[in-house]
Image 1: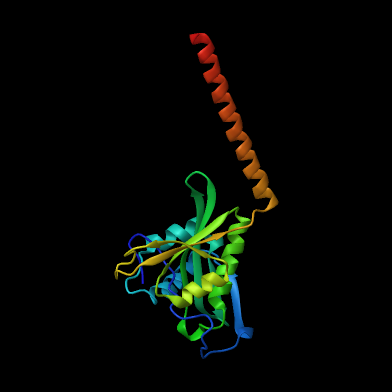
Image 2: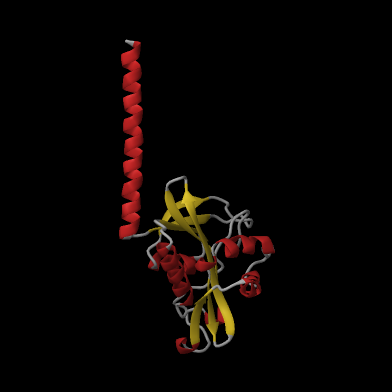
Length: 211
């Protein structure tokens, strides 16, 4: 499934379903490196979607936030990836977004999707994110269970979100604040309070002049 103007996860089976394939000992994870990895990510994601994204969509994410993309390999063979971004939401909180999540059918049921997202979330925390959001199809019970196990909650239902007419849930994960994030948040609050006090002082002076 996919949405107009949005990127969505492409995991369509439950993570706890049994699947044929080699055991976890042969599986390794790594962060996106450079443009040489672009073709790998495109191949993995395009294989799961009925209409592929343009190369510009991939480059938007991978050139701006390469640290938020992770790939998973069985030996030398890539079979899954997660692609994310982060930016300031409504001039307030730093928000992470899980844009693409793909695991080859052969390897599902081994917790790979969960581990890819977990690594991405850790990178978002390091980047100062206070929350993470994503969309998942209402009927995609496997993906919903995966994200619920990671702590995501349903924020809202998006009606007819996908081109196939299906609804989506927007899921949200609130992240614990690090000491650095708490200090930055307190500094922003002090600045806002100072600006408010300055505005009240100015208004008071205007009243005195007028009187």
